[in-house]
Figure 1 (cartoon, one colour):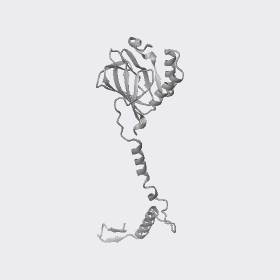
Figure 2 (cartoon, one colour):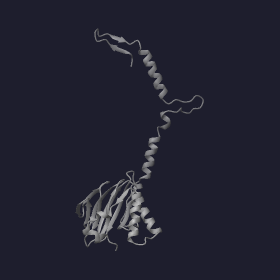
Figure 3 (cartoon, helix red, strand yellow):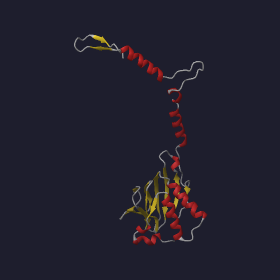
Length: 231
């Protein structure tokens, strides 16, 4: 910085002939980057000082938008879809992570969801009560209370209840706009009631495809087909 250095041969302190120029240039450069005041106006010129508060404002906005939430029993939002009893506990808009949290109650001896795969979101299922049968490709798992399953995007999966007791499960869905799929199904079936189960299934499959979800009813195992029959 001072332009001085020690000669490795003599040990004498030497002065660089260009030190003054470099120091002068450095001071000029630093001055050009530092906030200054416009002559006669008393205002700062455009520089770092003008935008220093922006990150703090963004953090404050995020903190206000996603305050902690507690959802008491019975305080969730029922979602009128034809698959199973569905309650939205936390919306994707309730956190910066964009995770939706649902409670699914699958009735005894009934299909919960037919084989399908997601292209835009991942699902995580945590069984609270009962035994839920999960299908991954050609593999099935009996999931009892305390079981956690990661139903990742791109994987064909399904679930059903083959017992005589209801199954209560928490489902966590990461991003992807899954809530909009459920909302679109509910609105479609409410505004134009389906003629029969086949009409309802066809409409749900069409809406699902528009939301990046591929429903594959032909992959339902033959042994559980009666569970998916219209009640």
